[in-house]
Length: 213
Image (cartoon, rainbow, N blue to C red; front, side, top):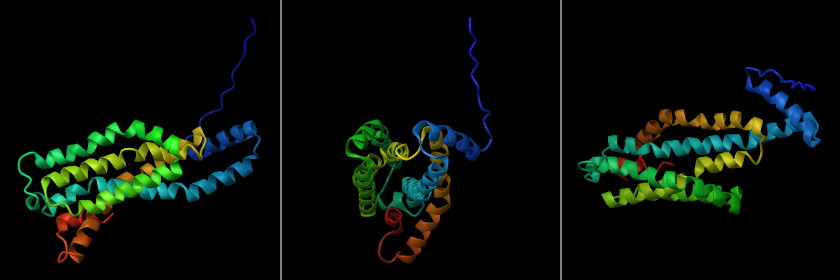
């Protein structure tokens, strides 16, 4: 019996070197020069990834901002007794989880160029009107619709990246924009405090914390 040997190339410890190997192989397969393929990839890195990084940073700031609002008096202003505050936190994740997969189907049908901006506009409107909340019912409605708008964002952004990058390039780019999540803890409280001090005579700081994004 004939024995066939499979040659395997060693995996490098750095993503850039692995990417170079993948670029050379994929470029030969689709008939594009490796140098041209690298230039196209760098342009995508410059024009696509930074925008997704910024959006994900703002999304995480907005998602965790209710904690800053609580410190500034949200519980007292809205009279959140018992488990009401915890319920308001949980309501966000119900539509967030349920809408994730259906949102990707809608994105593939309408296209990322239309659907992702629609999600961002809806999320921005929810955040803006959330600052006008004056009752527990309004807070629940605000958190529900905020989760509805943000639920399809992560899956949509990953699917959007897959339209520009090959499979072996995706993980490194996803890691780049997902790195914005830890940074939100550094900026969220600072922005809330600054806005609260600047406009404390106009709007209650607890309501203002929901509106700076």
